[in-house]
Image 1 (tube, rainbow, N blue to C red):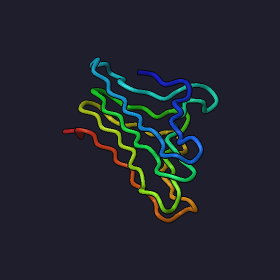
Image 2: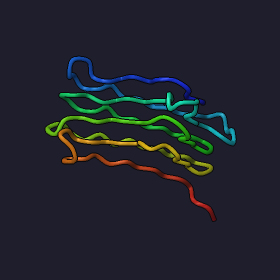
Image 3: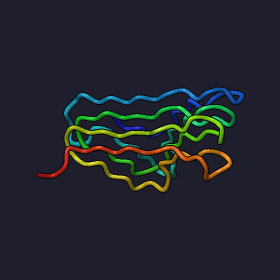
Image 4: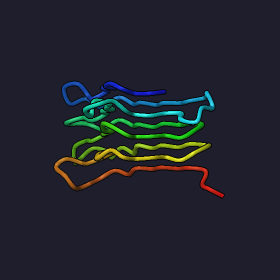
Length: 121
């Protein structure tokens, strides 16, 4: 799967943000990538007044974040989000300036980001 545009599940009017789950099953060398000229490959699961959404990807090959951003911000009083990326085969490459979870007003409390790979023997 190649993301070249916007997945926008922000919380409208300060409501809880939605969730994004990406699952690949094609057993390709590059299972998931975010790429496009000019930083336009974006996943935004943020909310200005409620919980940020969950952004997760489960791949069966390499995962590459080459362009754009992934955010799941929420306000200070909301539960922090936890973006996660897992792959059963291959590496996770992060070349973008932002995969983030921030509680507003930042920086407290922040969420967590989880990346899991099978490792190289």
